[in-house]
Image 1 (cartoon, helix red, strand yellow):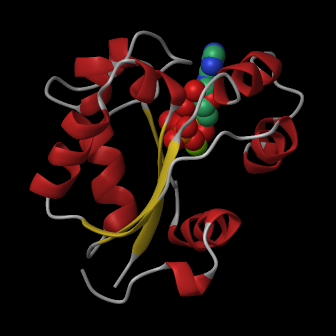
Image 2 (image 1 turned 180 degrees about the vertical axis):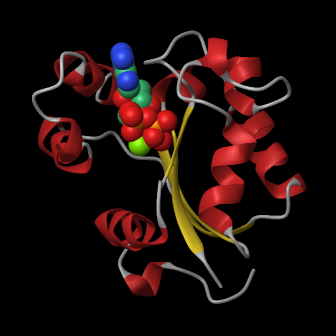
Length: 140
Ligand code: ATP
Ligand code: MG
């Protein structure tokens, strides 16, 4: 079954939306295989978003992602990567389709509530970044 790595970002936690967003994820048919709350160090956030190093928003993104606790989780579903990105909508909430999580809850292109892997290969890499295999449940 395909996996995707999701992060409920610090704005989601701060706005007390963990329950609301998780409900929508489960209602959409995703199975939660692992989940924890962590405060990312600068090094961890920079490593996770290394692909964006050098971009004008990089430093601000790292400050945002280290500004409070976040909730990484491993989700499983057929077509998990694409289906999750459809559920959350475009990066910029102003461009996100109506009814998507970002359209509904995100404040800006940066503070956009949730991360989802953008390919199955990156999903595998990102899952391993946060969770050793023994922390991932086979069933739930
Ligand atoms: P994510 O990787 O977090 O799921 P995404 O794939 O929709 O989001 P990316 O292009 O990978 O978008 O950007 C990673 C994150 O960097 C965005 O989710 C957002 O928090 C921030 N970001 C992206 N573009 C901008 C921008 N132009 N200005 C400010 N922040 C941005
Ligand atoms: Mg991305």
